[in-house]
Length: 175
Image: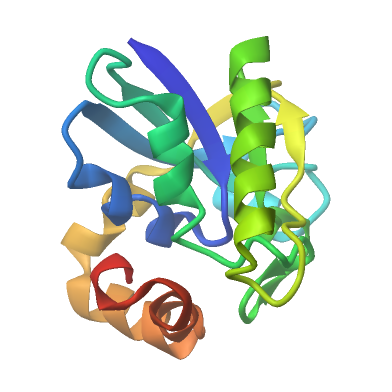
């Protein structure tokens, strides 16, 4: 099994898109890239821990490639905005690809180059590719939030602007 660690704003919205694909073993909401061990949601929200809300995806590379995971990932947020996502601003909501090895770094650069060449976005991709440093699972109530609180999840996704952005760029089946 392999791991992908990806930040794209609110981690609630980063789980559901991956659950529907074969080869995805697990998707965990958590915190990545910072300098505080075992951070809490409250601490990460202060934007002083260096952590970003992220998901860690366990996947079977014989079934789904890292490139395919990134192609899904880039359809879940605004990759041109590195200051946060939609109405969530600050370091905890900044996007990033945390690569686990040189192959993932190479693939991330290739996928970004392809996306930039496609001109699907009005601005260039501004999602950093960073070396994986750490990942801490979020509190239990954040895990699989879209299943636990579907109405609140849908309201948040729509109210934040994420749903409209995704539909504008990728159509209804990705939101």
